Image (tube, rainbow, N blue to C red; front, side, top):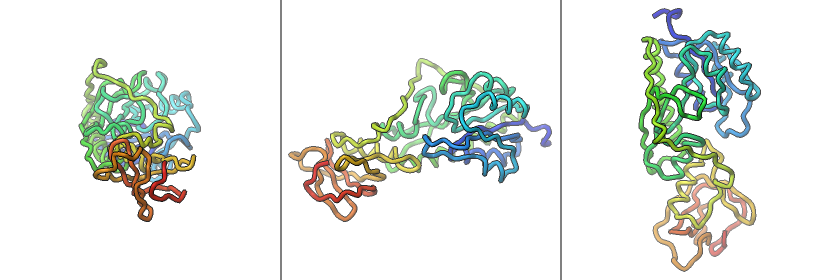
Length: 300
């Protein structure tokens, strides 16, 4: 297939995950990337990544937006005359003017087994809830949130030792292989689509800062799940000490804890390692940013 015969695609994204998949798409021999759209800044996203450097390295035209300028985005797509667009890691719902411009539509991505677990912060919720699996799903975007026809889907297991960083990386590897398959289908003139069953759908809510604050009344396993869910590339769970919030990046479970001590009581301090009683059991704060001196017997 010559370059002129390949399907033409645009790529829209603004996080580290987007950068990884754009790099894969750019070297795919069954499709031509006609251009890249990204944001100049997105302060609310811990994993924000402008795609301009990656586009420049690949020799791709790049549209840099300062915000949710969908009229400009739609005009840009129209000018590229693309067959399909990939939108991965974009903080705004796309409007009809954008969705309807590519001939085959816009393919989005959501790291769950859609239609289950639509909505916000899917990697964080999956880990915080202690799920043993999630998914990697590409779908044709519509006016809803994560509700369009499924193009490709794979289940991804979550190990007990996984955290946000390791799961983020493994989802990226799975999504790369799916990108290759989708491009092959597009080159063959196909785009398989399976409608979602709305009866099986739920939507996770947007998390707030308060959701990341450790409540020592939680079971130790719940605290560990919260911490591993919010570690890098995310901003970290937090622990309140003397009315100041400090980040906590890693905790370890402790077998056994005094039944007569209340949650939040410091059981031991060994250098930077702080053992704290929880609602059920105890945890060791193994990696954290606490700067207030602590000693055994202190109450958090």
